[in-house]
Image (cartoon, rainbow over all chains, first blue to last red; front, side, top):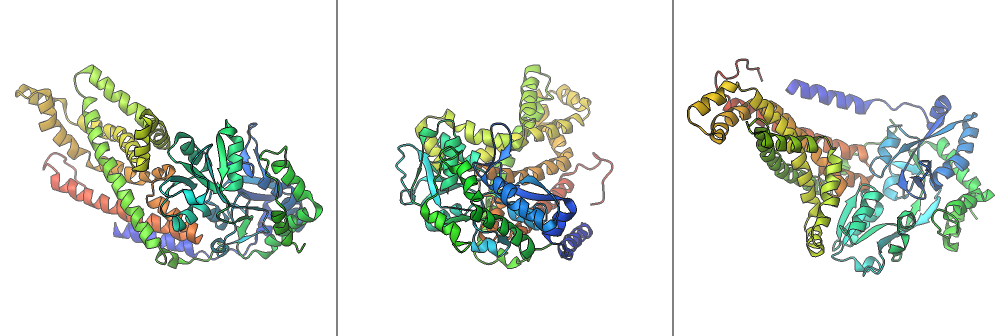
Length: 283
Length: 239
């Protein structure tokens, strides 16, 4: 028994100590011809499976139409984009294990995460709110004391509620559908997440009029695409893609496609958000 | 691998407290579920071998129904489908008083009870039919024969596969995180949320599960030896 255990431990240590392969992401993509992204299947309109069973969304469009051309330029040949499912708990391991090259979904750029991964330019800006049944007594973050609040495991909102509003009964679910189901059935009184995601969920629900997104933003959630830390060349290519999108207006076309009046989730961009996004490229 | 390890995240901040909390929840969840599983397992396992057909059918139905549906589905079933059967005030009370934990316990216990049942049935099947016949011939009722002769021997025979099943139960308790039970795996993910150090957090979780399972296996091996009936099992293995 002891021998087996020590063998096992030795194997684990050997695995962990394998020297870092000196290969950057662009080299990897050049060899394989594939840019692998980690994205969501249930976060409309950023990344989700639509009625026709297609895996689409704003984040995916940004990769395919803005980032992909820049990466192709950098590796000097046409590439394919391959999608894999990622979730808050798996996205960083997916990146560090080289299973995916870029996380393009709804990941908030935070200082803690920056210690482990690099983020692209911010491509969306939102903040946490609540989704409730119409007419609910919960109107914002100050009304949640004693209430059962659903959140998404591993999200920044869950962390804020736990730390700053410990009187609320926090319930954490691994994905949107489970959290929403709990809200529909009354297991919880409200579901908190980034405002735009709640708006997406409301728009996609069978009876959108039954639900309300309430409250001021009680957190700031700038979304970025995440990549392995310290890979400057790849980051430059990704940022160049987004930057060009801002400059040419292609980004705003895509925004309009998903969030415009006729989009999946109408969510007009406020002047503040526009100024915030453009400030990143010095405008 | 382009990753900077920082193991100190496991003992700085609240990580230690979270892991301990997660460990306690995992143990509570598993212990209660195990009791349910063993009780249901013995009952249905024994019923599947009794000489009365409707009882055998009932037990077979239970086993086949519960073991052939994924555990994850049972978690959702007990959490999302069962409480709506209660009146609304009772539902609210349940949701305010740890519905997640009890739904998880029920899911885990009833599912593993069905699997445990097969283990126990095979243990009973390994006992020669003549033992049962001899017991009845001595004047014991069927119930007495099972309680005094068949089950005590069968339970000894099934310690190794029973241990196996118990370890599965312990590890499967992590599925309860899908219905918001803050058990060990949940807490390792929590550490990841706070520190973005997923590999360290998962390693801590893995080691805790490993130590837990090894301890249980060791204890069960001792139990097996302590309760062995000399001469019943001819080949003993060196532990």
